[in-house]
Length: 390
Image 1 (cartoon, rainbow, N blue to C red):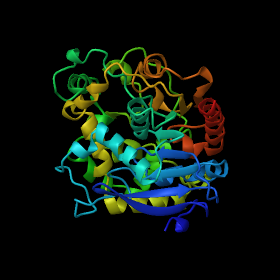
Image 2 (image 1 turned 90 degrees about the vertical axis):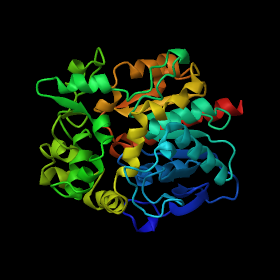
Image 3 (image 1 turned 45 degrees about the vertical axis):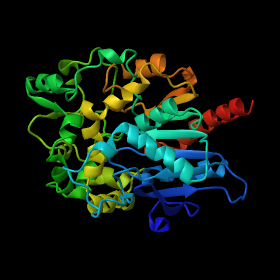
């Protein structure tokens, strides 16, 4: 199956593994040798699938690593064995989508692959906090971590007794956004609504055109992406962020991105996501819908499903850590103070040279500038391997 997808190297295989109540679909590439190779795990974000790592897997494998990219819970061809339908619904139980369970999924995957340690866990977008928490919670398994495009994980409170009451985070912020002129809303809260999946699955412009516009406006191809640090996490300061993050109150996401859709010439000149590769995402999401990924947002924006992470209050990531993002990615700064917290409070072992902003890339850095990302990953992994062997 994977060999028929455009952009997939011939040494990338596809298979499924049964892990607890999941049938997990993975893409994997490994050097042709019977000797065990160090494991690299690549964790995608939203709205992506394992396929988003296609440009990195072959060169990382050729460098001597066993590279595995799963479709994470709720995405792509990974299926719940207790869910009879391929479609996930809004009223499904959110407990499986809480962060602690997503980390458990990855730990179980490691053991299902026959490993007890991982050279590095690499996460992009929503996969970034999953990777970060993997390293924070189980440093005995995950020997290093690379977080991409989204600084993470959030610094656990040093005093869990001061945790806020269990109510949806961002409620007062939502009211502040709605009071702006013109009124606005935050995309995470929109993605948590009951109508979001229907909007994304059946957009007015069609799914292919919607995804093309969505990937375009969050990439360096959209000239208006010139991000910078924001002083405070207030609605008035966040209102400068493009509409794909801070949306007009009464618009859907497809409506938000439609006004800035690429021209036919821009589409034709796109080399990092040509039409036949975009068609893979369209086909997969046409089959599954978006609710599985949207449930990640719902669990993240409801304190009921995040409070169990307070058990790690005050804990830091002590294994070697790296951050990579596109220089034209607003995702780096959409949460003011998150970058500083990651570098100064969360990560105890992140060198200045391992905080990397790649020029000419937006949010989809591993697709837009795959070669540059591979170079930085191999440089970092070379240091980690030397340190661990010493």
